[in-house]
Image (cartoon, rainbow, N blue to C red; front, top):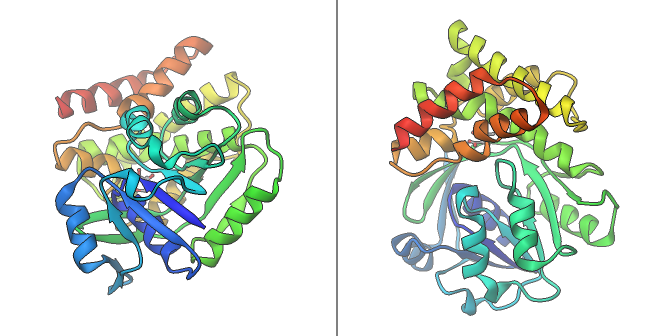
Length: 304
Ligand code: PAF
């Protein structure tokens, strides 16, 4: 399969590298970060995983999407603040038959991609992997978890089965879901509980659980998000999203969350699509979200 990864950050590199290990795949990592793309072209993508270094030299780093042309699958992995712009700038990989998959954090990406390439070619999902950039051409796979993907209408199509099988073959264990919107909210709960708090405290994901006062905030933020989801009749997979968020803290204990990485690198964070989305959705559903309001505004202040 010919695959484009739009956005070669740590998560994009993880998926690109793993997918390139299947011999019949042709995988392009697309990014505007020139030093990073040059390093991948020169030396391959170097991944630190379980304390060993593996070089993936079949994955192709490119800055110009025309070098790839139309792909069978395009995985959008840019930060959700950049989704529309990234799809617009990389139209060269999105042909009439290209399936676009978003595995991004936050609410709103599905609609933004649909607005650019049309309804029927968009599928979505979530990932529980954690990854960190180490420098140009090099990243760490910091925590493993499942990938879950699905068609927006819930149908179990041939294309979704093919992609799930391909991911699993590449070492990215993948399940299929018939309620992908609920899944996006499942992941949103996790990000609501972990990301802003790690950004503010500078703790690694696992360390959040070592501090009772931080655990109290994590629980309160996720409880608000759960109340909003229930008010909007979103079908969540987890009875206990707080417990699930703590499980993800443990599974990705060594990881610096994507929001902490953004704060440390002086980059814009995804706060407005995560805790900020809970404030917006809460307001429209009549649910108060004071903890998410505080977390959102502290991160907005920090990223200024
Ligand atoms: O945004 C992130 O960092 C990740 O979604 C997660 C699961 C919180 C792991 O760090």
